[in-house]
Amino acid sequence: MENLTAIDKLADLLHDHAKPVVRPQRLAPSPIYDLDYRMTIIALGISIHGKTEADGSLRIESARLKLVQFVAQRPILVRALQRWARSINGSDFLPGSSERLRRGYTGDSTYDQVVQFMVANGILRWDRKYLLTIPGNLFLAHVLESSEREGMFTPERAVLQELKSIRITVSMLEGQ
Image (cartoon, rainbow, N blue to C red; front, top):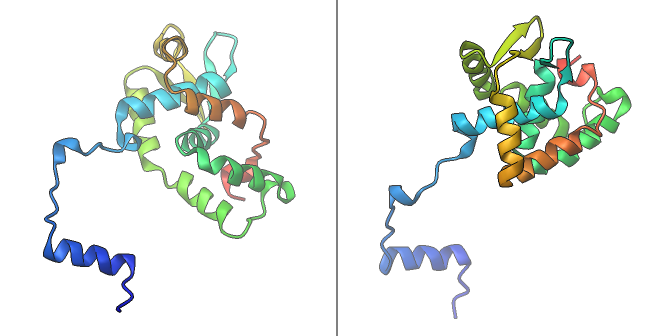
């Protein structure tokens, strides 16, 4: 009797009996590339990690925001970030995970484009390496209030809260 692997059985099934059918209307696009989702995660990141300025705006280093929003969308990375932060001064690479994490978040060009969009729409403004909210623009307040009220983005908000307990160093953000 022949000993078939699962792949062999699947190949046999597809070859002789089954015809794959793809229904594009049933495929869900990844939220990672959804503008509304990304704007929401950035808004939540600033709301949770930003520091309040004298004029009432919130201020955050862009690199810090880029890292925390990246991890918030990928909760499995929290442990890798914790290990990285615990390494010597947060600057030594742990084999594999922190290197991939750094490459992943620094290469997140969608973040850069969404921030440009938010700046162009008067939600955020640049101050050197910092991003600040625009006083009087209620976008961030609305996102935070409605997400809490409606129970939306609970996993992302929980990750962002958890990240507040991790010491993220300048060397982690700047790759020095």
